[in-house]
Length: 287
Image 1 (cartoon, rainbow, N blue to C red):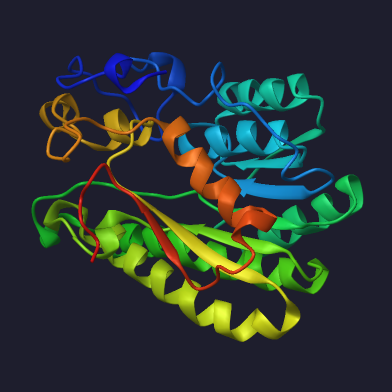
Image 2: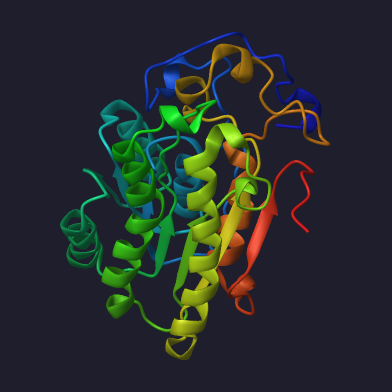
């Protein structure tokens, strides 16, 4: 899809219950279903992607499959969205395993890695992408339980999954974390989410140093405002209506526009990159 044909704000006013469904969004996000062309960059690889049912995770799954990778699709409970992602992976001629469950639980994270190793033959790429966010205007409205849920989803889970996956990852493998523009430009209404994304960036740098001698690379992608089910399900309708307008490009990004960064970091083309954060922000500055 050319830039001139990508949706511009305002989006129709809309609201969903968390975590949101792709089919209810207006407009429907572009995950690269019709546009991404593979070139065998990940031939024979196995990728475990969290939050792969929708949004950025679905776009990455589609791209990775078309580049030759088999995919374990980890998601919470959005069965219909996950099946749609699996359909695209299988249409690319690759294996897709769909596994629901809560990555806040360490035992579940360990089971995801075990399933990838036993059913897909190993694990070469771990994409820690799933995230939890809510919006509040006052810290008084954020409960301790919700603060804990945000941190356990956004930063504990990448720790659990990385710890479980690294012993199975050969040299040349890649861990890719999804951080955010919020790690550098935190918004007050996303207090908990932004704090976790700062932690994700720091975790990326530290882990990269820790596993360098194993030949495993650890990097992150920092999206700006991206049109995913998180937006209408966690933001007031007036915010989702103008979502992305503040970027230099003047609109929200589509999930498909992130795929190339994740492919770069997973492939041999990114072989000299570790401890890095790639901004895909529509021009929101991260320097």
